[in-house]
Image: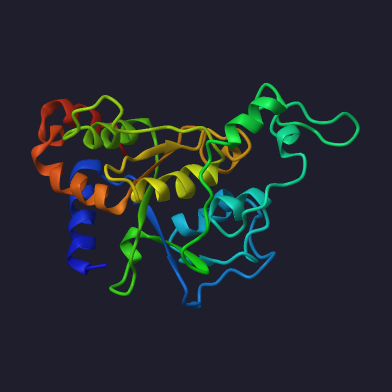
Length: 247
């Protein structure tokens, strides 16, 4: 990551979004670093664990670092689906398995799973690091904001600034970790990558603020958004009214 690019965004973010929380980033690598998370040392839910990354602690995970079966799968470190997953996500199995009831029936779960692309991580490790801590050796693939409504509105509108189609931002169903890693990673491979709004996962929401959602942007799309900031609505009186409300 070029330090000029890093610092330019920080300056623009401060100018238009005040002291709103800086985003974190992720990238894959085959190099083990000093920030590797040892098994059992953080919350098994990766969303909960990433609270430390949001506060400025670089974090590197491998398959052993992540305690959640779904978390391993949605960052690409496992391909297997837990036994009876179609019941787990829907109605459960009386006396055996409590269901989350996020889908109406096991059959709907099975059909929905057919639309999920297989995901194998392109590296042995995934690194999460806050934007201001990026160094020249870092190569972020996705930029992840945890944003309150006014900030999210600004990001959403900026993402649509140069977009001719109405669905310039997507919000696919999925776990919290799928909304910040799995879906935006595949968007990064698309011809026209789109930001992903997420963190609608009821099970993961207790680990973030009640008035937060995520906004995950493939790095190339993010760079375009940054390039548009100073000629967009962010320079208008309309945005100034909103900006006054951002801490």
